[in-house]
Length: 80
Image (cartoon, rainbow, N blue to C red):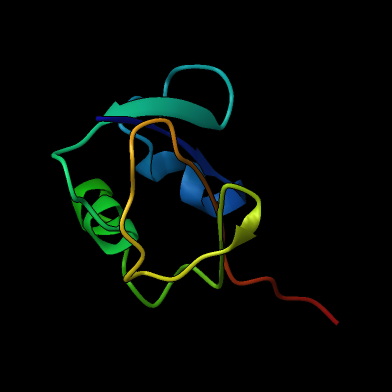
């Protein structure tokens, strides 16, 4: 199955092809993959994503994916 993944700010280097312009790419996954499987495949530490949107709704690492899903991952934000 194919999903769209968007990694923001400091997560962008984890994209499969970080040299491609933009922060969104399409990736191929095995059927019945979860959001956690995506994070592990991309090498993103599991404690790094602070907000995960799955098809514009709050997502969790345990959510199962289907073909055409869209994931947006937000890293921790600092500042004061």
